[in-house]
Image (cartoon, rainbow, N blue to C red; front, side):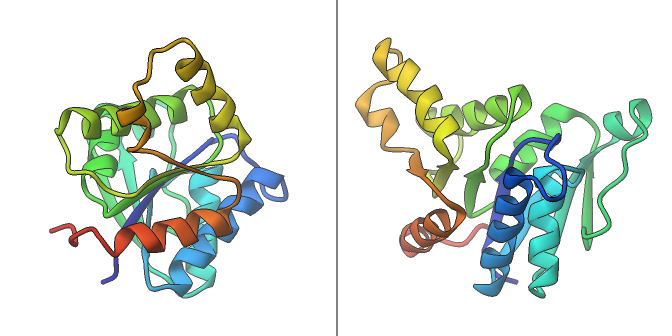
Length: 185
C-alpha cells in the first residue's frame, strides 16, 4: 500500500460545487500517484476526495465515528473501501492525524478548523512527528494571516504548514515533502 494521505474539509460541499470538485480532483491526483486517500468517511469534501481516488483506481480509507452513526444516522460514503470505526469524534480526528504520512486540509468550517489546529498543535509540541501538512485555498491564507498579524503564531510554527492555492499545487508540494519523510508504520 502507498503513502496514506489524510484529507480534511467541509462536510457541506455538494457535488458540482467548486469545493467538491476541487477535492475530487485532489483525490484523483493522489490516487494516480499511488497514494492512499484517507478521510473522515462521510459526505462533502470527504466524499469528493474518496470519489476522485476511487475513480482513479486508488484505495480509500474512511475513518468513521460511532457517535455520528448513532446520533445522526450517518454512514460511510459508498466510495470508502476500508472503514475504520472510532468510538468518538476525538478518537476519529486523532486517528486521522496520527495514522498518515501527510495531511491536506481543504476549505471548511469549524470542524475543519479544529482538525487543522489539532494537527498543527500536535506537530508544534512534538506529540506527532513532523509530516507534510498542506492547507489549500485562500480561506486558509486569510485565516492564518489573522493569527500572524496578531502575533499569535511564531515564524517557526508557520514552517510546519504549507499553503497551496490549488489541489495540483498541493499534490506537487506533497510529493516534494514526502521524499524527506519515513513511511508511517
